[in-house]
Image (cartoon, rainbow, N blue to C red; front, top):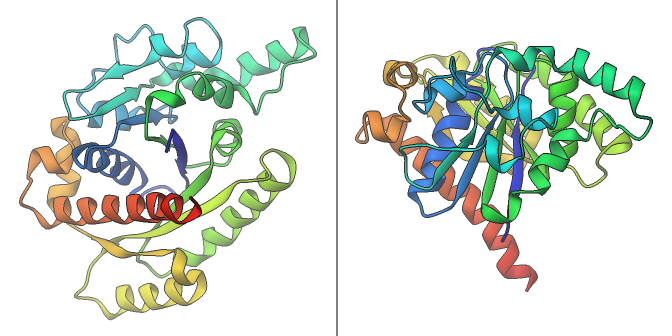
Length: 268
C-alpha cells in the first residue's frame, strides 16, 4: 500500500483533532509504518507537538503550496520513529490572498488542488499521510479534502457532538460532488470520554447508532496527560508510554491499519 492520505477534519475546535493527528501519526510510526504528518493549521500546534520550533522555519507547507520550495524541501524528520512532518506557522494564514493573486495571473490555476499536487509528489515515500486541518471549512480544508483519499472525523463525547457533524458531512458531500468523487469517510473516532458521566456514554451510543461500523472501537479518554504531552513537544507514547492515552492511540492505529491493509489483502 502506498501513501494513503487521510484528513482529520472537524470545523468545531477543541475536539481532540490535533491531539489525534499527532498521536495517531506517531503510533502508526511505532507500528512500523512510514508516516508524514501535514500540519495544515496556521496555529502550527501539530508542529510544536512533535518538537519542532515553528518560529524560525524557512520552508513549511505554505512555501510548498505557493511553489517557493519543492514538496521534499518542506518536510522535516522528527525525533520519533518513522515520523516526518510538513510543518506550518502563521504564514499559512495568508494563503487565501496568495491564491487569489495567482488565480488572477494564471487562468490554469485551481486553488483547491494545490495540496494534492504537493502531496502527489511525495506520497510514494510513505504508507500514511495524515493532514491536521484547521477548525474551519475554508480554503485550507478544501485543499485537504481534494488531496485526500478519506476523512477521519474526531468527535468529542459531549451533548452537541452531532450538531456540527451534519454540517461537516454536507461539506464532504459537496467536496465529493465538485472536487474529489472518490473521497470516503475513513472513520469516526470518539474523543475526550469522561466515562464517569452518563452523558458521555449516551453520546457514544448516539454516534454509534448514526455512523454504525464507521465508528472505531477505540475511544480516546479525557486525560490530563494527553493535554500535557504536546507542551513537551512529544507524542503521548514518548511522553508517557504506560498511560491509558498511549495505549488508546496504539489501539486506534492498529484499527486503522487493519481496516486499510485488511481491505487490501481481500482485494487481491
